[in-house]
Amino acid sequence: MSDTEQICQSNDHENTTRIAMRVEYNGKQFCGSQFQLGVATIQSEMEKAVSTLARRQVTCIFSGRTDSGVHSSGQVVHCDWPDREDQIDLWRIIWSLNGILPQAISIAQAQIVPKTFHARFSAEARQYVYRILNRPQRSALLRDTHYFISYELDLEKMQQAAAYLVGSHDFKSFKSRNSDTTTTICQVMRAEILKLPEGRLEFWIRANHFVYNMVRIIVGTLVEIGVGKSQPECIIQALNEPNRALTGPTAPSWGLSLESVEYPEAYRLFTGKQESQPLSHSAR
Image (cartoon, rainbow, N blue to C red; front, side):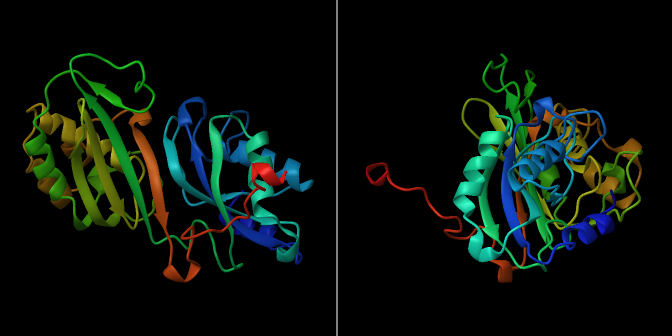
């Protein structure tokens, strides 16, 4: 289903209320976020749960696509709920949906938004984090969320290289060959590597637009710089001379997580108490 068809379907019913949800998921067991026939995806599970609770077919529109194995703590999804705003109890909707959804998917927040809000087209920026475990031995606890690298990485050179990404650049060199034809010009506002305890590294990147597999290819390139196969300046060359051969391999999907999506301030999305609260234990 195209985005245009989804928008039309969302507006078929006048007596609906648009709800935006912040969705967390562990992507290990799913074939990405976008619906695909015959396989488990985040969208198919979301639409199944929402439609079951709403007792009619409801389309869920995502802020963007994540690949197989990629996680999220900040995916934003909207749908049009078949009730008027004054009839909606957001807390009960969230509680009920989390009871229907698989354990690997959870709705963390929800908010009623105007019909002008669109999870994808209203977004102004997105932020991802890629997590690496850099120590001699693997971890049993972090294996699904961190890319394990046992050899020593030169963090200083990797940080130097990451800084070159900030600004408006053509990221064609960091795009998978089988991706779509959208623009490869991206405005990167943040690109930095954080060193955490016990060998954990986090690469944070925030931009107004991402091309397909961009973050994972950047990480693959940074790792090659970290082990001495390339110099930090190779990032500059790749940005100035768009050529996939100038960049490193695509890092594994399980280290990547969509952390947040930003929208215009007017929507005040998830900035305060939005959903009703359950009764206290003593009041039940």
